[in-house]
Figure 1 (cartoon, rainbow, N blue to C red):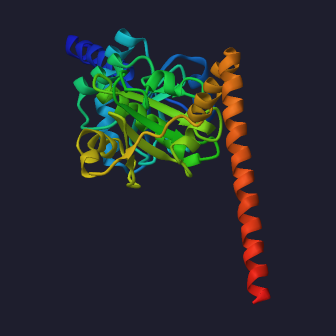
Figure 2 (cartoon, helix red, strand yellow):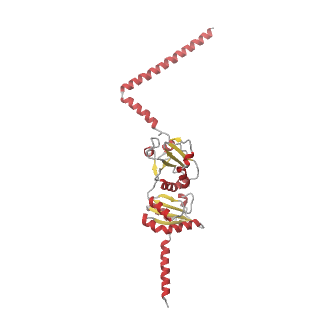
Figure 3 (spheres, rainbow, N blue to C red):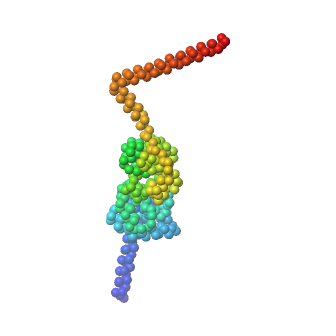
Length: 306
């Protein structure tokens, strides 16, 4: 005989089951994950692995906020367990929480706090880091012409550098934390930014440098964790008491002489005068050299006759 208590118990179990099912994060394999990231604009991926206490802790936090993230930014939230793809986006590996915005990754780092995760992802729905090239680097940074656009933290990478690829998500995280204080950019030093790379004497990838008030502060450490990069641009750069001046553009000197030549060409009278002066000095130099040679030869003959 079915009692009222059994009915209540069954209803309670059904409700609990529904709530637990809604709290679970959908799990995907790498193939489906690649398709999802490339097809959707807002995707949050939790990377986990076996026998990982931190992974379990972060998963509980994400489960608690997934509905809020779906409502506020329209994100699709999935889990990738024992995934090889974590190696592409986070050198520190699992657990890792990454927000893909139009395919551009943003790594969450820090304490596993629900409000901080929601705030970071909500306030950074668009990529922070600007992709610069030889065509627009100086125009946007004004590094050598007054730096009126503010300070810039620049990441020089190359497409043949696999390790560089792993740093993009963490570098976006640095930009998200400090975007109100300075600008962030990346440059393909062997591609569209090859001249800029040579200008700043970048010979390997990755290379980070802080451009501040006409000076170059190079990040020389090999620890590229977001916290370390933040520490460098906040205070660490001050340890470099003799920073390099920002080098001029590679073609600035050539442009100067080209401009002077063009000005002379536009004024024929000045061009004629300049030609006469140059010719006169050249003639004087030839005459003086000839006289010196004759004098030397005469002295040698006089010496032999004695």
